[in-house]
Each structure stands twice: as C-alpha cells, then as structure tokens.
Length: 346
Image (cartoon, one colour):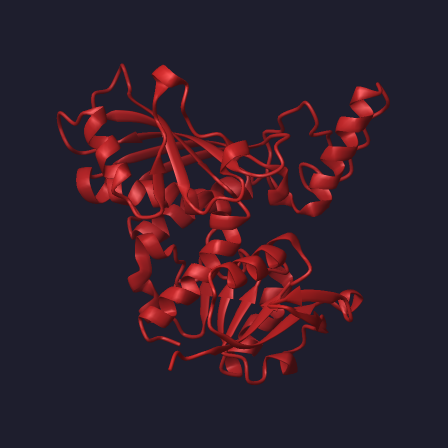
C-alpha cells in the first residue's frame, strides 16, 4: 500500500500557496490529511481541495503537531519564526523563502540538479530563488559535459515575483495609462522602499534593496545560490536583475564560458535536449524561441537563441524562460517532496 502523508501549506492564501495546492492535486501527491495555514486575518477562509472544503487555520507552532511535510511560502519572517518549530515537531520543512538558503547546514535543492543533497537535511530544505532554479537546470548539464568557468546573467522578471499586489498594480496602471490618467505606484521596485515607480510600459533595473557594492539582494541571491547548488564556489557568476511589465514567466539572457575546446552550437543543443525538466525551443528560421507568455502554466524550463559568441570560441549565449510561480516556486517545492519520498527520506 502506498504511504500517505500529513501535509501543511503555510501561506496557503498567497499566489505560491495556491499553486502548491494545484500541484498537489495535479500530481496526485499521496496525502492522508492536509492543513492550510496562514496569518490570523485569513483564518476561516474556505479553500477547495480534492472535492472538499477546507478552512484556513492560523499558523502557530502547535499547528504542526503530527505533520509529515510542511511547505512554507509566507515570507522569510514567518519561516524564521515557525520553520524550526515545525521541524522540532517532526515535520520536514520545504521552505520557499530566502530565510535559510545560504545556511551551510541546510540543503538548497533543485531535484534535477542536486537531489543527492537531500540526504544531508536536518529537518529543513530550502527552495532556491525563482530565477536561480531555471538557470541551474540549464547550467548543470552543460557544466557536467563541457566544464563551466563564467556565467553572466541578465534577467527580465515578471511582476508576479513581487506578489499578487504587484500584479494588481500593473493591471491598474495599464488601465490608467490608456486613459491618460496618472499612474499610481506604491509597490515596485520595493514595497517598503522610499520611492516607487510605475511598472506599466516600463522596465525597472532594481529587484530588492541595493547593497553598498551596487548589486541588489536579488542579484546576490542568484550569484551565491548558483554556486551553492552547483557545489562550485570558484565559478565566476554575475547578475543584473530587471523587473518587466509581464504578469508571469521569468526570462534570462545568459552568457557562459566553457572549458572544452572546439565545442559546437549543436553539441550544446544536444546537451540541453537531454537535460531533465528542460525543453529546447530554438528555430530562428521559423521564429521559434521561448517567451514568458507561452511558458505560463508549463512545468518545464525552456531554452532557445543558442549561439556562439563571435569574440570568444568558448563563449555561448542562451535565452532561458520558465513560469516563476511553477518551476520557480511551487512545482520545485513539490518535486523536492517527491524526491524525499523516492529516496526514502520522509
């Protein structure tokens, strides 16, 4: 008989929490019971799951009694407050925030890339940043086959990465702009920041706060997380992260330098075609390439526009797109849980 699990979703009323619920149903995750947890203000809200109505409960330490797997996506402060409490009560925590990602003893996992790291978990496993996940799904098979010395990324990130409130503001600004009314901005680039800009018909080259070195926290997340997941602290990685007026789907322009001599574009394409969870979509003659609009709702990472750098025979350019709420968040979390089951770790 298939083992079934007692599951909790923390942040159940948010965009990622909703996607987690959908993925658990779609993938027929073996659940014996489920709790939907959130803040006090959401208590009592109805959530429909597997033909039944469930009611949101408050996320408290006691709520995790008897839970086997707890998916967290309610913000870093909630994870810092409750994740260790959940683990202390016997739950395996899969955390979709930045709270624990760079802690040396907590694995940071993309199952297609570093599933073996799950064996070192001590109750908490971190889900990487959305833009990092799609990147490493492509980098790791290339690194294994060709070697990798440098990575430079420019991201074009959807507003849903900043939450449903950012999506609502984009919709409102689009409407206002069309009527030539003032475009009110209160959310982006950083909701808690002192200055805000409209995202409609705009591109904002800031995601999260700036550090003294001029890089944003989002850029440092990508750089540091990539090295940790690939177990390659010497890899040269640099990132620039930009917010675009796209609802869902993060896009990345990626430049890589490899170790192998005389590598062809076709060889790189073949490696990508064989990579798990990755689809090659690269036919310039037919104008076929990945776009965020067509990645929405799809599980895979899409890669196209692969070409050799004209100034460096070991340099290649790629275009990578994925649904940031699915593979970039909810789906990867569920896949971590599935990998734990496969490895007999839960």
